[in-house]
Amino acid sequence: MNIRVILIEMVVFAAIFTAIVFIIYDGDKKHSAAGIHNYPPDIQEEYFKTHERLDVSYKAKNVILTKGLGILIFTGILLVCSLVAGAKTFRQGFLLTFGLMAWIGIYDTCFLDWVLFANLPMFRLEGTEHMDKAYHQKWFHAKGMLFPGIIFALIPATLVGWIVMAIR
Image 1 (cartoon, rainbow, N blue to C red):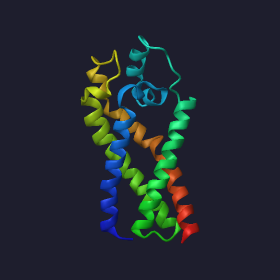
Image 2: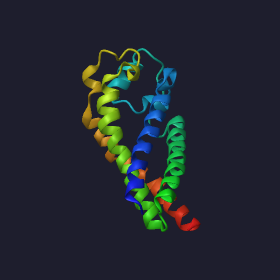
Image 3: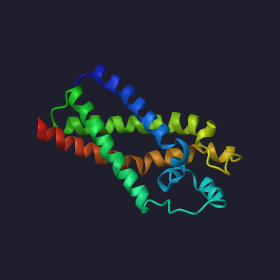
Image 4: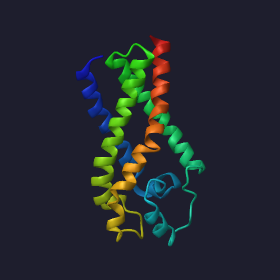
């Protein structure tokens, strides 16, 4: 597989992921169960003091649908990445996809969550604007990247590996 292509794909995947995050958190979309689900519990509790309480657990219908849609979108994007990079076997497709998912998890945590989410007012939920310390919880985001992030990464990696094996 071509390393130069993979490095370019890492940059493009990060740009696409960033665009998706900004679209999801634009306006009232961040107030959906799937949006609030990604906030630390203390921010959620403060928000629900003044807003209608929504089910933001992993069992919530909107959260499941959003995560499922994310898996499908990532599988499509990463299948193209695997094929362009030259993956020919299940193992190559799986490893490249899992590597790109790990990369996006690190990028999401270290840049989007720790820098942008923590500092840009557009990501603050109404009534929680004063909770600066809560928005800077690095461990909350790091834990999310590790679990369920790793499990989430295994799904598109496996799907891409199977599809690459079937195509090639």
